[in-house]
Amino acid sequence: MPAEGKVRFHDLSLPDDVLHAIADLGFEYCSPIQSKTLPHSLSGRDITGKAQTGTGKTAAFLVSIITDLMDYPLDVVLPKGTPRALILAPTRELVMQIAKDADALTKYTPLKVLSILGGMDFEKQREQLVNERIDILVATPGRLIDFIGRGNVNLRDVEILVLDEADRMLSMGFIPDVRRIIRQTPRTGDRQTLLFSATYSGDILALAEQWTHNPVHVAIETEHLTTDNVEQIAYMVAEDEKFRVIFNLIKERKLSRVMIFANRRDQTRRLFEGLRKKGVKVAMLSGEVTQRKRVSTLEAFRSGEIEVMVATDVAGRGIHVDDVSHVINFNLPEDLEDYVHRIGRTGRAGKTGTSISLIGEDDAFLLHSLEELIGRKLPCEHPPEELLASGRRASSSNEADHEVAEVAENTSSEAVAIAEETSTLTA
Ligand code: AMP
Image (cartoon, rainbow, N blue to C red; front, side, top):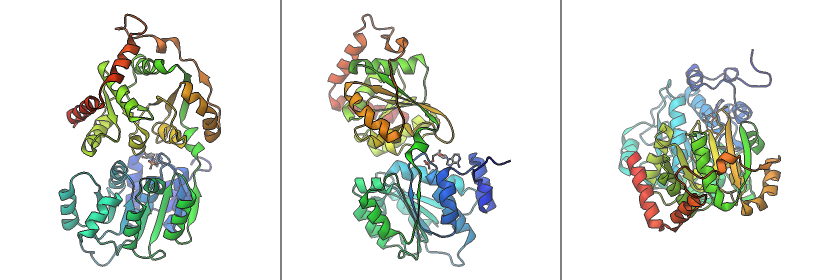
């Protein structure tokens, strides 16, 4: 018997080849964004969706695209570099993740997926565009513009356009590029447009208005993401206890799938360096790590070779790694919406996760607003005694702090060199 109120993929008259791939992924019921958007998108309507990462929005638009392309095959063969569906996403990580999901969902179909992303493999991507048939193109805006300019991509036959994380495209300054790209596709009304954004500011609403035709608006509220699968803990600590609490958490609880978020690059660097010195298998993702290294670092984290990933919000947002058991907030983010993004890194795909926020003096000021945003209390506790204990190697209770202080004095160039060395090792 199906669970009450839940939509099964089987109820949506999807092609068998798509259902088979969905079953392989272990998805049984549609997530809310899927059950709310799929009936409309499958009937050809435009969608504006308010949904964050972690809600299943990627499968929502991919299942719709794949079903459409399978149900309506073309009787002509399109020239190379001419996709039938185009998905634009702001970051390379997100493009890679979407392409990976698309590969999994198209595996029993003849459809071809290609990703185009900046920072790496220009020549390889060019050759693929020139030589291989594509049905679904997933791209970051900048690199796609390059290929359009060289005549390697032609968007006149795009039937379905997806704009993913439109708010981040806006905040990262990509809108002029996106606009130029959209101009190359058929007009609104002659293509189907699915636009997703975690937030809907006036700017996003205006863009959605221009780029979609009579859309169905679907909103999945933040609470779905934060409260359901993630146990949220807050520890009241002094600033100089934070490192020790994090180290003890990892060691004492034998955590091996952890993401730690900090607001500033220098904090991520210090944490990374401090944990590395203590023998933790740790890597760092921040804006200063090169793209190629970010990719290899992420792969090492996915494979389990790296157990702890320290990241800034910008670097951490696009990361999709299943099975992250704990998210630790070294501090609360200045933009509180990022709290939701951070803790959304765990408790994914129906699993449960834990987030632990370390509330120092500065963070305490934000707590009330955060509670309003997430719509619930976040009781602050004192950390259990064992988390405050100084390490075995520490002869005085201050030693761990000295170590952190020492780390803090490191020059940034040294820390970056170490980060790069680590990522190379994990390549
Ligand atoms: P997304 O919001 O697209 O990043 O998806 C978040 C995670 O949910 C991914 O790991 C997906 O594999 C997983 N997922 C997507 N749809 C479903 C579903 N219907 N049931 C279970 N897991 C899902």
